[in-house]
Image (tube, rainbow, N blue to C red; front, side, top):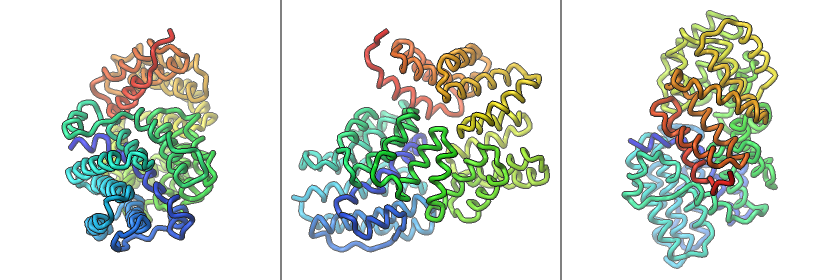
Length: 482
């Protein structure tokens, strides 16, 4: 079903959104501190909702379940906790219709369970839950237009509908679910910039959007960094995700160390930072710890692949063969990372090993290591295809180091070879990055041309995500100043 096409955006945007959405209204309670410290207590049954405080308590109970199921990926826990959805919605229905909290909490619970159903494989259930949540929040907006939390929920839904691939958007439109990322961002930015849990939630979601959707890596980390509670485990985890996406893996590593005992997935993220840096012994240690401790399916294939690659780069052929065999046997979870791992595994025989090292080193922002790899690769005889890839990697590094003139020249050299590499992502991403660079320089007509060119590519590994970014960039272009 089409929801799979953008489930990764839901993972990036929705999960942090719910972590602290309503906590400010309850003060510094024990439950609030538990969430800030990621000390989760799932599975509490609801009581009748007679007051707003009761409604907020039901919300927080569900929030503990939601975060636990996202972080731990346990099918058995999901089945055990699933009946609480109906129990809590029935409890909410007993509250007074005069309370703005009633409609808000109802919409939030439906949305949370919609995302959980998507994550645990019930796609149609997820679709109907998201549709029902949208209808609930629209009713609450009409009945209580001044209730600020309505705008934040509606803002998230606008972003989610806005990143839906164009060829699937008609399905949402058919059921009255419309929105744009820009409108969603504007609604989220209406939250006052105060030292509160409410503003922390907005800081997290804005940081994730700016890093993962807008690729504004200079601004993305500032939202959380400027908040009073930036050092809590909750904020540290998501700031680490943002830093890693912003090609600042060494800084991300320090944040992941803060939460490694609370979030099983942190071991994978730590392994990734060491793998990108070329510290392969440490990478294997953390990936191994992740595989042993994490019971879910996500990123297991990728972790095993990178353990094998680490062994390869350390010239340990027997270990390489062992880990690669395990990676091939491990079923894929369907995440984009694991799908990419599958492609690497399928093409190991054609892999240029230093080029692969270079790709990951640039992703992590380890530019001295990257430069040493480039110099080594340039001493080799390269096929024309490998030469194009090297040019693309050098363009990415120049861009991330703010050497814009060099980056533009190198990206243009890549797109000159677009026909040769039509099924790779090098050309479409080169067009996307050229669009960003032209936009920064106020050359909006040229930027528009580059962004539209991204959409013209029919087949490549990252079509869904690159098309979404290009469409969003086009929607943000102001009238040309050329």
